[in-house]
Image (cartoon, rainbow, N blue to C red; front, top):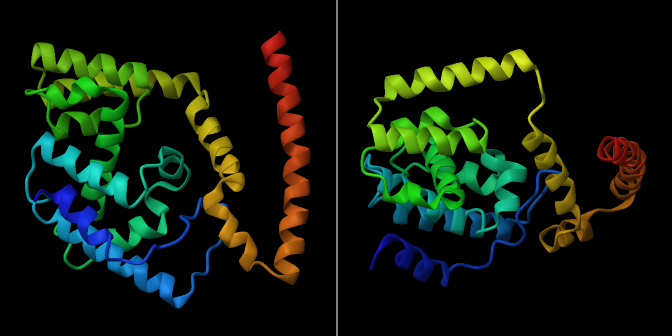
Length: 236
């Protein structure tokens, strides 16, 4: 039985952990939910143990897939909205039996997420984890171009770092806010209406409910202004 099969089998014996938090709410889980979360972290850490000691690209992809499927429930919106600040991920990253650093764990998730958009990455033989780490954070089109060139021309990590540094330097000079960050913030707001947040709404009472209503009123006004500017930009 492989790591993914083992973790799915183990998960069937663990109580459901409930909704993942988008980062917009502040979750105060009940004791049984905390226990379930700890059990889930135990299961994931155990499944990762067989691959986390390897340093190949395939090992990183397998680690990233396990975390994406079990910690982020296979939902890319949850991954982008909260990232490594997600409570389940933080509990896993601090697990005493994890066998890898929190930064290495998050890097594996980022590499797996990249492979979902760039499937040929899993077939590369020359490009390794060190190469891919260099391009994380760059615009998607630049990531793909640099990785293809690295694989076909067998670039060293140092050569790739030089090319990536030039791109980052040019982007700093342009002083433009990456569109992806703006869209990620909108995705976080969109999660307010996601089913995974409904349970948290039922826990709010009194002053919390009124504060949330007031905050939503302010957000609604700001979003109306932003929508107007976007419509003008689209028309102009």
